[in-house]
Amino acid sequence: MNTKNLVELMSKNKAKLLKAEQIQAFLKRELEVKEYLGIKYKKALVNDIVNECILYDDGVFKFDDIEKYIVFTMRTIAAYTNLELSEDIEEDYDLLCEAKLLESVINTFKKEYDDVNVLLQMKCDYILNGNTIEAQLGRFLDGLSEKLDVVLHALADKMGNFDLSNLPIDAESLKKLMSFMNVKK
Image (cartoon, rainbow, N blue to C red; front, side, top):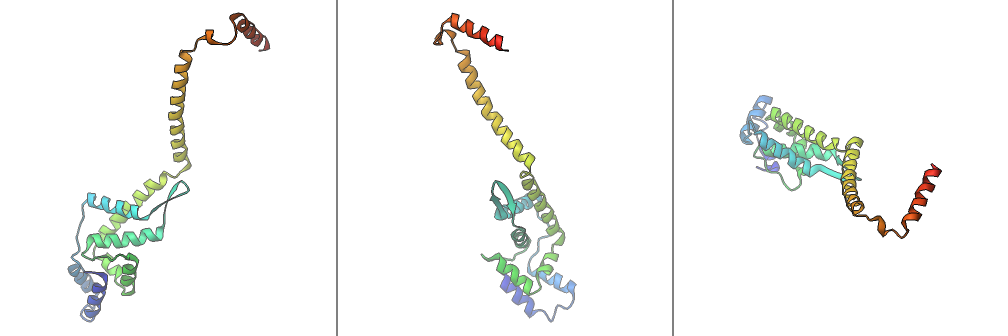
C-alpha cells in the first residue's frame, strides 16, 4: 500500500474510527505491522539511514539532522509496515503529516521505533566521535609515525653501508676537523 492509498483509506473509514484505540487497531491490521525485527535487521536499517544522511565536509563527518529525522522516520515506517514509499519520501512524509496520520502510524510500533532511534543515535555518536581533535591528532600521528619508520629504516640501511674512505677528504684532514669541533664545544 502506498501513502496516498493509506490516506484515502483512512479518509473513507474516518466515521467508523472514533477512538484512538480503533484507529490504532485498524492501522495495525491494514499496514500489517511487524511486532519485532531482529538486531541484525535493525543494524542494517541504521546503517542504511546513516549512509543516506552522512556528509563529509572539510575533513569532518556531519549529519543534516532534519534529513536524518525524515529518512529515519520514513525508512523505519517502511521497515515495520507494508507501506511502500515513493521516490520522494519527503512528499510521503508530508502526506502523512497533513492527514494527521504520522503519529498514529508510528504508535503502531512505538517501542521498536524508539529502539531503532536509540541505535541510530549510538551509530551517529560513534561516527562523530572520530571528528574530535584528539581523534584527528591521533590519526595524524599514527600516519606520521608510519612514515618516519620507513624513512629511518631507509636511512639506517644507507648509514650501515657508509664507508668513510669514500669521503672527498683524507684521514688527516678529518682528524683536524674533529679536533676543531671538540675545541668549539
